[in-house]
Amino acid sequence: MESPSQCQQDLCVLEIFNEPGIYLDIGCAHPIKYSNTYLLEQRGWAGVCIDRKEFDFSQRSCTYIVKDAIQAICTLDNKEYDYISLDIDCATNDALDSIIKNKITFKFMTIEHDAYKLPESFQTYQRSVLYENGYKPLFLNIHPNWDCNIVFEDWWYDPKANLSIIKELEKLDVLGSSYRATNNVLWLLQRARDKA
Image 1 (cartoon, rainbow, N blue to C red):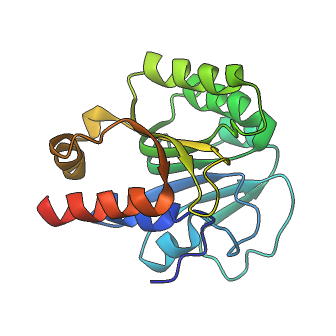
Image 2 (cartoon, one colour; image 1 turned 135 degrees about the vertical axis):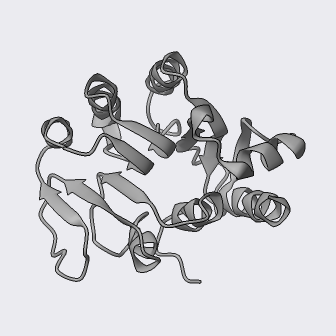
């Protein structure tokens, strides 16, 4: 299975969920290249893609919103998502605040903090908000396979979602672990899925 995602986020989502679900892709950019949700859509998922820059999304079936993310989040009718991909660089924390303020929930989220180039306070703030709202880290400080110095993302889940793979990751004693390459995370998820 070919992944257009930068770091296999799409393949990891497919390991976490047994059935297609609903996604929210904030900061989606190009409809296919580096998309965290294109492959999900090909596997029966539905969802919303938001970006402030206009791209040609005619080959996608998602709802595509060309608007500032914070404004767009306020207009969403659906408040429950299986997966949220959040990556709008320096505005990511503002978007996270808008998600919480508008009572939008998720079962699994990949959120960029870009620790390799942004101050630690940026990442600390995200973690504080997510912990305060009942979410738990699946994996922290994810980095791409090709460079362990580019620590850019945390992955969070809702413990109330009762995702079967979480119990298996707990047994493997890797839940909430840090500084993992995405190919290692995918391998762990595949191993947990085989046991779930």
